[in-house]
Image 1: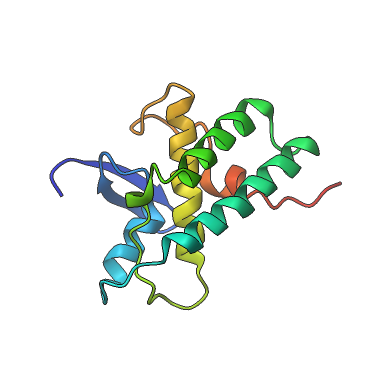
Image 2: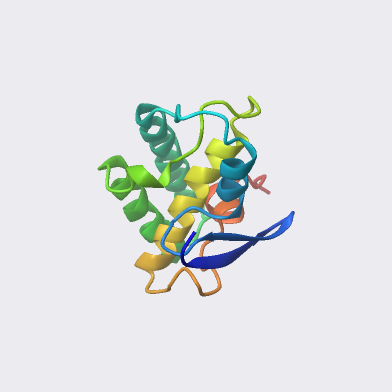
Length: 141
């Protein structure tokens, strides 16, 4: 890894390639499951992006996700669907079986790309959180 940025998650800090849109959990999966050249099919990642888009739209409509976050997230999803970021989904199909890493890979890519679309760099504090915003699962009051 030539240039890296430092990412943090519940396990601590980890170096991630500076220009990658993925984050800490994807990087951990890459190192812990470096067991095959078989990758998650891009068709699956596009289907997951469609699910994320539907969730973003619903959460925005319900007032659970602010417009300042939902708009750049929707643009990021559309970029993923167009194939622009195919290289950002590098995970092995052989993981733990729960697909948590795959889900977080998508969340991290969308959060980081949306952050860029908001005019921020990947080395700044994240404007959109991969779990709290992209994977929004709050219970409605």
